[in-house]
Image (cartoon, rainbow, N blue to C red; front, top):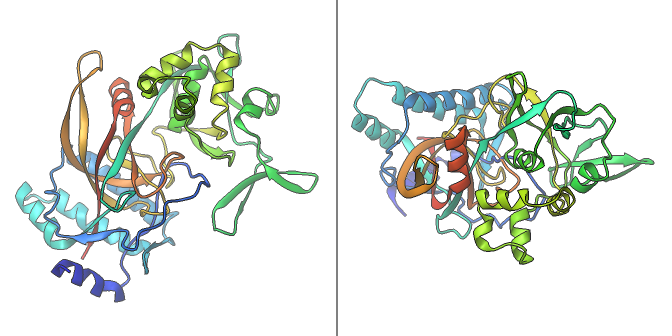
Amino acid sequence: MTHLKIVFFLMLTMVLVFAGCARRATYEPKAPLPDDPLAAMETSGPGFIDDLDKETLVLAIERSLRYYDGRGRNRTFNLADRSVGAKEMKDTLVAFREIVQSDVSMEQKKKRIEEEFIMLKAPGENGDGSILFTGYYEPLLEGSLTRTEKYRYPLYRPPTDIVMEKGSNNKMKISRSVNGKKVPYYTRREIDVDGVLRGKGLELVWVSDPVELNTLHTQGSGKIKLEDGRILTVSYAQNNGRPFSSVAHSMLSKNRIDKRDTTYRNFKVWLKGKSEQELYEILGVNERYIFFRFVDHEPVGSMGEPVTPARSIATDPDYYPQGALGFIRLRKPVFDDQYNVIRRVNFSRFVLNQDKGSAIQGPGRVDLFCGFGPEAQATAGSLKEKGELYFLLRK
């Protein structure tokens, strides 16, 4: 056991830090939690090279601090046999922000980080430290505040008949009441095909393309451009409590598409070649349905704070701590003028764990928020890389 590891475990008597986070939870079985979920290591290991500007990092830190001062102020996070409060999480971010904003050289900053923080390595799905990174982004759709022949595919706000209550596993259960009995909420097929929510005044906005609408359901937030040029931002508000299933993987397992068609870009092209009836049959494989709300500016993550492009990540809240300071290392795509990938390069940066997602399950998955615009879309659509994830704690 290294000296740092000894120091780390001696600090059990002090109330340290941690627990979980991610982008839209499901109730599928989790991978078993490793005995040592976040292993202490020498802080000089990853090198602490950051490929982005410090302004976006400070902005993301401040959003986590707002969470710890607000709705997360009474949170406690469990890390193995340790229970840690929001104050310790906040102290880590405040100390780190002071280093980032200090007027010293980059080498001096790296040295201070190594001296003042403990580094914890995420185990990955198999305990080997290998993490699968993907990306998500904020899509742009054409839409209207009134239904027309062109704009006839609705985004719904949360229905009033949704019943939410905590289950025996402390997870939020979503249902509806029928004759005094709780039953599962409507499926995607029942909502989109059978129209069980039509005419109830729940339509938030209408869009022109059902495939792009499905992308919006997957990403969880996006922008709607109206015919008069105004752009509205919509964000996740609620889901129907049904399990998430990958439509592309389902089509691959049924031999309806080739493996090359499972990529983001190719799968969208494949879907857009289907009739509306075929499309709804295909998309109905994923029973999970997302309800939306308007937000003023940027998309909001699971903490109730805006997510920061290239700095916010989504992980599984059963494994990694919400709002925590992290560090990632992997490869990213480099594009030509048409956003075709021409090569991939290594990079590393500090990130904040500020969101969660339906497909982000277990200790071996991370989703990086790529932002808005064509490059963000191209990055999110082509990012599928193995890498490393670390969390930092103040000593």
